[in-house]
Structure formats: structure tokens, C-alpha cells
Amino acid sequence: MEKADDTTGIIILAAGASTRMGQAKQLLRIAGESLIERAVKTALGTTFRPLVVVLGANRELIEPELLDSEALKVFNPDWPSGMGSSIATGLVFLLEQAPTIQQVLILVGDQPLLEANTLYALVELQARTQAPLVVSGYTDTLGVPALFTSTLFAELAALHGAQGAKKLIEKYRDQAVVLDFPEGALDLDTPEDWAAFLTKINV
Image (cartoon, rainbow, N blue to C red; front, side, top):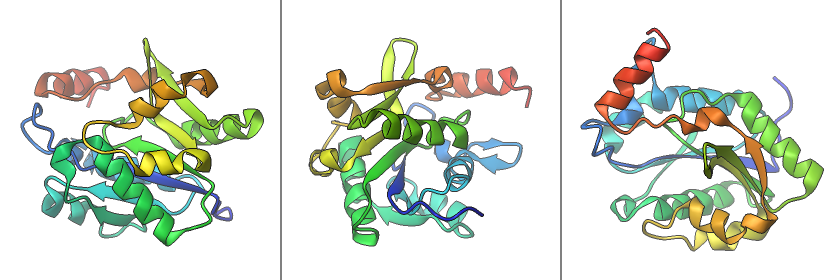
């Protein structure tokens, strides 16, 4: 394996309750592999370390999926309040493990078409432009995966409730650089979404 890049960390948000799906969508499987396993494998397919997975709802079901992984795990007891608290929990924990981290990639666990190359592209785009924020663009939306440099760490750590990464993306829109990632438009929120996705990929 290539030498680890210890200036870039990764946070995977996997704390949500998947209410509309009716089950923990982190555990939905493609060819025997759960979505959270797939997300972790994609992240570990890069040289960026450490990798932190933020757990919340269904922790006892999801955690066993990560037993054989080098991913670090942190529990967000405030997960019902929304994604903001999970981002803050993940970042604070990441910085405790690796205080010299200069930038962080924030991912979600339900983008099964995400590949390591996209994460590398986000980092390369930041290096080329020196932007404080590099976001993914799909349909008419800007979102994750996204890269935040250390200049935004204090604001990320102060997020709470339903204020997720989009709050900062909107605030710093004029300074952000966008990476085209049309696959990010895939929404897996309901059983119908999941069935349609499986049909599309012929699984």
C-alpha cells in the first residue's frame, strides 16, 4: 500500500435512524456487502487516514459490520438531534486521534456509487485551487462527499441539530470549488428507492 496521507482524514456519517426506509439502511446489502462496509472499503481504498465512522441509531447492529476494519468508531449520543451533531462528534474525535490533520473529507454511508477516485479528485482539486471547501455537484445540489480545510474546522465542530454540512456549503458558496459527481444524486431513503436501485444495477 502507498504511504498513508496523514494530512487528510475521513469521516463517514452513519448515525441516522433511516426512518423512511423502515430498517437500518447502513445494513442493506449489495452482493453480500452492507452499505456501511462498502463505504468503509471505498474510504480505505485511499491513502487518507485516519478514518472515523460516526455511529448513533442501531449502533449495536452496525458496529459488528466494522469489526475487521481499521476504521475508528465513535458514538454520537446526540444523534437524534440531526446530522450536525454527528459531524461535530466525528471531527472532534478525529482531531483527538490526529491533531495535525489539515483537511477532512465528509462522506455519508448511502452513496454506493462513490469510488475512491472521487475522493482523490476532491483532494487534488483543493491542492490545485487552494479553496477552503470542495464540494460535490449533482442535479441542482451541492453536497457530500465534500472536503473541508482546517480553516473551517471550528465551524464544523460547532454544528448542532439538523444543521449539517449544507449550512457551511451555503455560507461559503462563493469560495467553494465544485467537483461534478452525478452519481451523488442517487437517493436511498425508501424501500422503493432501494428496489429501483437494485433493478438498475441488476442485483
